[in-house]
Amino acid sequence: MKRIPCLSTFAALHLLLLAACSTPNGQPQKGSEVVAPNQVVDFDTLFRENCSGCHGADGRGGASIPLANPVYLAIVDENAMRKIVANGVRGTSMPAFAQSAGGFLTDEQIDVITRGMVSRWGRKEILNGADAPSYAAKTPGNAGCGEIVFGTYCAACHGSQGQGGPKGSAVGNTSFLALVSDQGLRTMVITGRPDLGAPDWRGNVPGKPMSDQEITDVVAWLAARRVASPGQPYSASNHAQPLEK
Image: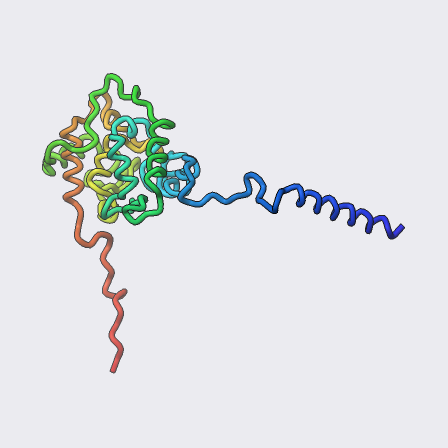
C-alpha cells in the first residue's frame, strides 16, 4: 500500500523529464522570451506604461488632459503632438520621452503612441461645420480684454478671478498656473475637460462660441497672473529658528 505514492511520484517525474526533453537543445519555448523595453511596439502597452499615469487609463483623463478627447485630436496638429511626446514641455510636468531628448523611447515607439491616439480616438468629422479656433495662437493676446472674456465665459464656473466656484476648479491658482504652459491653457479652453464636465469653446455660453481672439486673450490674462514664487508663503513660525549661543 505504501508503494503506490512512490510510483505516482516517479511517474510524474518521468513525464516532467520527457517534457523537458521535447525542447531541442534546451532552447526556450515559444513565447517565453522577454521583450526588451526598446522593442515594445504595442500601443496599449506603451500608453499604459508611459502616458496613463497623467492622462488616465485609455486616455480618458487624469491629472492632465484626456488625450482620447476627439475634439482635441481634431484640432491638434499631429506633428506638434509628436514633438510634445518626444521633447516634453519645458517648465511643466510633461517630460521628454524620446531617447534623443533624454527619455527612454525610440523614434518608432514615439510614432506608435502618436499615430495610435489619432487612429483609435480621433474623429475629424466631429468639427464638421464648426468654425474651430487654431491649435496655437496666431496673434498676441490682450490681458485686459481677457479679463472681460473670462467674466463672460468662465467666471460662472471658476469664480470672478479664477479662485474657483461651485462648478469649476481654481484656474487662477498660482501653483496651477506655474505648472501649465500657455499652450496647455489654450488647449483646455478650446477642448474643455469632458472628464470633469467642462465644455469646449462652444459650450460656455449657449449659442455663443468663443472666438479665436477671445481664447487668445483669456489665456493672456491667466498667464499674466503667474507669480515668481507660486503657492502660499511660509509663515514666520515655519522658518528654522537660530540656535541659542
